[in-house]
Length: 116
Image (tube, rainbow, N blue to C red):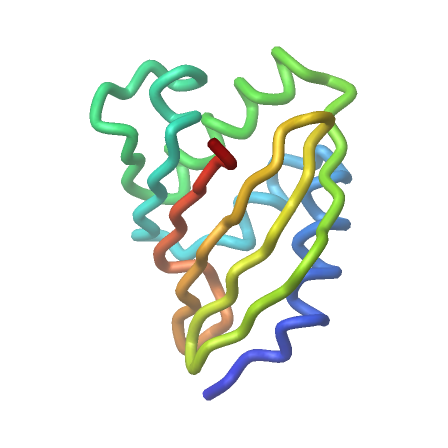
């Protein structure tokens, strides 16, 4: 089922900017796989990959500890059959977050990509 990408993007942005770790974690499925170059620098995970909602929640907690003023701004939104890609900006960092959604609309796979 094709997701309502604009509604998802608005909810993702609002939830992430809330800094509410429980709300953010609730965006992700229990067995999510999360990949990002930031995982190495923020979480210290050499593979750049996190497994599971608890690990993703801990990652977000470390982000907010380092950057309590962090604010996401969504740019372009792209939709697939069961996926969404969000262009975002955080300060002067720009990136794309590609996410696959499960049948419940939770993020089952996410890959962050930074502008180089």
